[in-house]
Length: 469
Ligand code: UDP
Image (cartoon, rainbow, N blue to C red):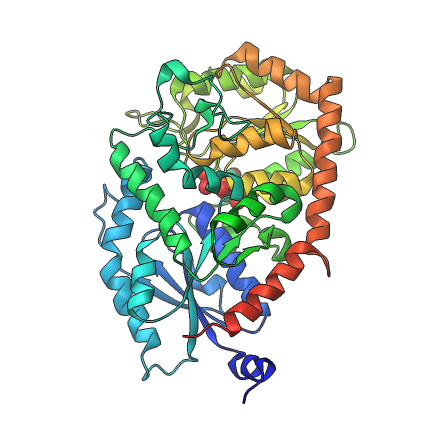
């Protein structure tokens, strides 16, 4: 009779097939996870759509297979994120099945496949894996707390919170404190049915899987992780923050299209001794879009704040408008008049920026990666969530962990100036900074030998090696 040790020994070096949702905030953590598992002895195969594909030459130790997702040019756009996600879940099914079947077939020359690891938002992969008798483990790239809110969608519908009514935005969701109705993780859509299908699909797919991996750490989300453990009868592995285990700057590590502008680091360097922790770093991630009016209020709020700022204005940050490109909308001579106090780039090396001694605050849309990266560098946040889980993350940042302030009353220059002052000048800001530095320490500790994430990675490795495929 074979012992567990013997089985684990025989299975070392087995292949894992990973399939990310092809969006920056999902590809990066999946590739980080791939690197973590690679260092634990697994061979790695990445299946990826042609859409948004990373550059394989940046990952010579992985094998890549690209599948045609058959999206037209207009469909392959994040303008309608929900439609894109729904389409990916149908159009990828056949090519993904064919690719995975080949990898699992007995005439494949590669190592036997131990399991599939796919993004929670690609639930169609659960049925494909079951058909091929391959266990599927899920990576959820968002937080555990927001996932619980997604899991509560049927209840929220039943109790009348969803669909959201504008007249109730400020009311509490009594079943999920401290959320208010406006924090519920929805996205503006004319098609609420598709939203609910995608969300319910994600939750059911996760429940049916062989395990759930989280880019989070116990000390950050303990109560939510406990609840998940009770509600989801499968093993869960909170083993983040990934980017601190596998450090490589985000977009260059995935080889995606966006070029990081390094000029901002030399600009930050100049302030490091004269004005440490003074710069507000402003970035809303890779997808969120704002209106022209909001763009101008942000510009004037920053200008009037008297703090130095580094602002990422991604081409495409402004909601579709004919013609306007990049900084055209700014009043003429805007930056010049500030005498070097402001710097604007199209894309920044964000982790490097947040770790820079000149940076004192992060004005963020609270994407989960940005939120974690800010916590890991101990940088207090100004929260401006746009949609889905960003809203829940922002409420946790401001009201649960109390490591940031929300722009609660809209994007308006006076409000912005006041919030920046509260965070950068007033006593309240000092306390917020102390709290986030404490969380930063906990994040680092979780990854050290004996720490919760460190142990969770080891459990995951054992779990995978003992899976029956
Ligand atoms: N990012 C970056 N440079 C920028 C803005 C963002 O490298 O100028 C990275 C950031 O470090 C994070 C990712 O892009 O890892 C954004 O992920 P997040 O979950 O915060 O937001 P999303 O883009 O998915 O909305």
